[in-house]
Structure formats: C-alpha cells, structure tokens
Amino acid sequence: MSKSKAPAKLPALPYTEPLSVMTLKGETHLVLKPDAEIRARIAKFAGLHALDSFVANLILRPKHDGSVEITGQVEADTQPICVVTLEPFADHVSEPVEALFSPPEVLARLVEELEEEDEDAPIDGSPELPDEIVNGQIDPAALAVEFLILGLDPYPRKPDADFPEMKVGEDTISPFAALKALKTDEGKG
Image 1 (cartoon, rainbow, N blue to C red):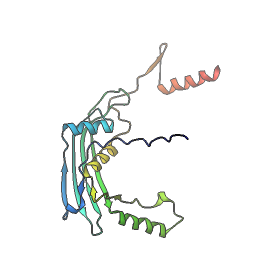
Image 2: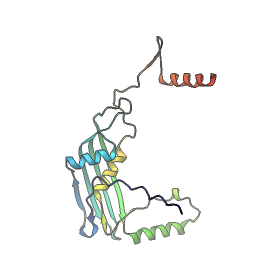
Image 3: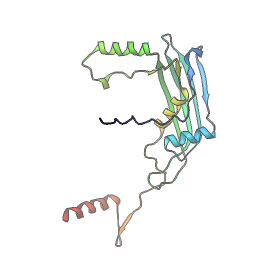
C-alpha cells in the first residue's frame, strides 16, 4: 500500500478583512490602507522588495439577487526587483478593480443556464462567472491584493537597465550573437 502525497498547502493570504454581505445596506465606499507590517507581508507574497504604499478605494454595491458588485481602484508604490540588474527600483501600480461575487445558488443557476444554452460550446468561450460568496462573506482586502498582483509587471526592469554587452577578444557582441555562437560551437563537436 503506497502513501498518497498530501496536497500542497497554499500560502496564507497576507491581507484579509472578511466582510459579511448581510451588513451591506446600499452602496458602500471602502478605503483600505494596510499598515507597514501588512504591506511587508503583501510585498513578500507578491515577490516585491518592498511595498511603500497601498490604497484601495472600493465601492460595494449589493444586487437584488444577493450578489455584490465591487468596483474601484488600487494604487501602490512598489519596489520590484529588476530582472536585469537584480536591484530593487521604485515603480507605481494603478489598477482598476472590477469583480462580482454571487451566492452559491445564483452561481449554480448561472452554470445551469450556460449548460442549457449550448452544450457544445467550448468552456473558454463562455462568459466569466462571478466569484462565490463563501459563508455569507466576501473579502475586499484579498481582492485588492489580487488586483495589485495583476497590475505588477511580470518582468520588471529599471527604466535605464540594459543587458551588458559581451566582449570576445576586442570585439563587442550582442547577447543574441553570443547565444548563436554557442549553438554553432555545440554543433561542431
């Protein structure tokens, strides 16, 4: 009998502030400004050297079917690590937020309607489903972190960073020429 591997544990979210949807009475304006300790956890989670500021201005609008629409903006001053120099540098993220959370019964109805519309339609061609309201709660803080990460450049590069030129003897060659030369040398052996 072989032991099965336990599923990989997901890292704990760096910033959460669950909110009961039952407490929402009409349009709610929410401003999230985590303190330095929480920003440090978010920076680590997002792979940043530092997160100097982070503000999420959100508007929560309850819908008649129990869903909650969230719109707004995330603004952050970040310090990503440059992929060329491996040094941190200052950058700014400004990311619009748009999300819809729905109760499980609304999600089930939407999925059923999609299946009835066209059973042969590819899944990736269907409209995006809302996120689920879990145990009557949504987490605007976790959503704001998600949108911050979506706004980060996956390959951050300092504005003045260039790949260093390579020299062979007295000739300067581009990194791509150097790779081509390596490939050509491998073929000769």
